[in-house]
Image (cartoon, rainbow, N blue to C red; front, side, top):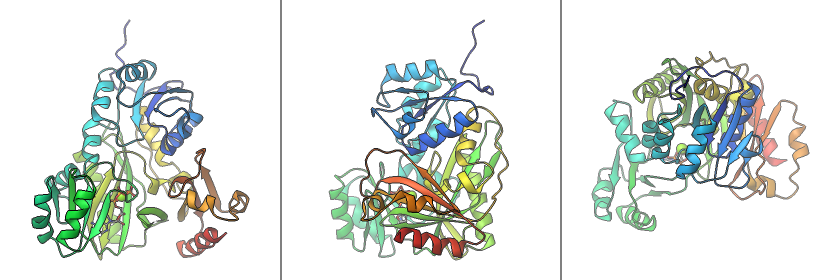
Length: 380
Ligand SMILES: Nc1ncnc2c1ncn2[C@@H]1O[C@H](COP(=O)(O)OP(=O)(O)OP(=O)(O)O)[C@@H](O)[C@H]1O
Ligand SMILES: [Mg+2]
């Protein structure tokens, strides 16, 4: 009897799960999947990648290679992505023969900052003033609608603060627009936030949503440096953040793991951006929670209900960039000796400035002492 793989059903251990993208997020997905008895097939153009290294099989091909996508669909029982810029059409193509999550439409929204912000506005979710820009002639008028300080960002492909610039005049915004090559951009009013938080959640095929505890995020040079859990914000902000995140997941009819970045000003929140995948700010869940964001990604993909999440202990997550590894006297041994630290190394062959190489989850009874520990770790 022919079976239709497209039909969503819960997959037994031994099934093969596909992941588009071979980065560290794919690696940690694969590790979570293998712990539960699933095989993983990675599709990624690189010959070696952090995810392929720990997975059963690897298809070395581009994300728009139809023959490779067809092969992925043939060998897998369900497919997800760890890379948000995978073409939505590739996800749609896969969806013709195998269950895919997250939904291609949600990924497509997350890929473009203007589409993302319009979606928030259409669903009455709180956003800061922002204007889409497709031509340099629109920049000055858009800048006039801001508070005098704004951020111009390319609509697509930005990450770790790349493809964006803070501007204090229309002329500055215009030259940034030109510097970005005249591609579609967004101009956002600068938010004088007290802090940044994010919510990582999972939504299953039955529509259940489980949010992880709210994380406070600190960036250095546009790159996430530290995450603090629980976030040090008023209880009303924690509640709002989780409620906004859950309603966003429902509006997107989302399945899988979704991350939502937000700015906090006093007791109010405005949405920054979403990521249709596990997120750097959710890495603390690997050691501080009963289920990690990657466990939930596997569960939602294999058709299990999301697990109820508990935080065992407060946590501080510290990103380890290539900068640290390349610095004089850096020694993994010193890091590994921290008894309340859990070190996750991504297996990248080359350390480069600003490249995410590993993270460390520090667990303890209160975040203030964990923060001072994190500072002394950085000085090691
Ligand atoms: N409108 C804004 N007002 C004030 N600060 C901002 C604004 N937009 C972005 N930032 C700052 O720049 C950081 C990076 O911006 P954003 O998250 O939009 O870009 P990104 O490159 O996708 O970053 P990441 O990959 O780290 O998520 C934010 O976390 C925040 O610190
Ligand atoms: Mg961001």
